[in-house]
Length: 216
Length: 99
Image (cartoon, rainbow over all chains, first blue to last red; front, side, top):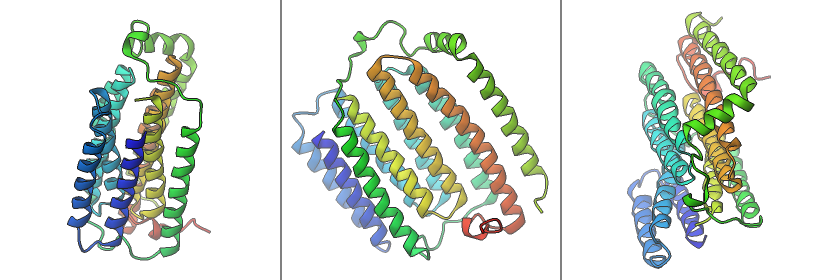
């Protein structure tokens, strides 16, 4: 868990540096690389196999999420969000959720993000000139509340009764496969499934009407 | 490595998304931040499903993905309608219904 704390502090400093000094874009990156290498050297004994890869994927996930928010160009934001979705799909695989990992890549990164890419390209959005212009109060309030919220969640998670990471062998056969999830979905959650279908049809009709007609 | 690792990562992703919605003014980026938050919630569901060794969390995550798809479709349609009318994707310029 100490590695994770180090990672969080590193990301926080990176985000702050990037927000404070927009005119010197290389400094935060240099600090990020140096900090990551330092963490790697300090915790090299604890990082065996799975833990190393989980830490690396977590690093990329948080970094790409930060860049989604902080990058001035919407197109880069979309691409970083796709990277983030792939990282989360890898986490799903580590948690024995194979079907969800595949669905994450096909539906989220494949379909929904392509929609975002299309719209950004269709509207031909340029990078925002001044990310920091205006709304100072809301910006700083959001940052302070966000940091407080993050520490609250962290505190809550640290103080719950812990549970180990179960090895894949301890799960029953077929946990997280399409077969088992499908059986559960169609046996016990049929109504929710049908309701989701109605929701999707409603969303589709709404999207077509909104995009077709001129708003007045 | 413990399940808490994934929970902390998910909490961080959720916080970044929430701050992003409040800080950014571009509607498309705000929609992307909402996707980030939904995704973090999904990760939490999967982590708890792993902890309890039950598949119900997977079902929840499946429906969250469905809702995210619907939300993205409607949200982007609204953005396109707004852009046609006002030539902007800035949330501050769409203030007709604010007060």
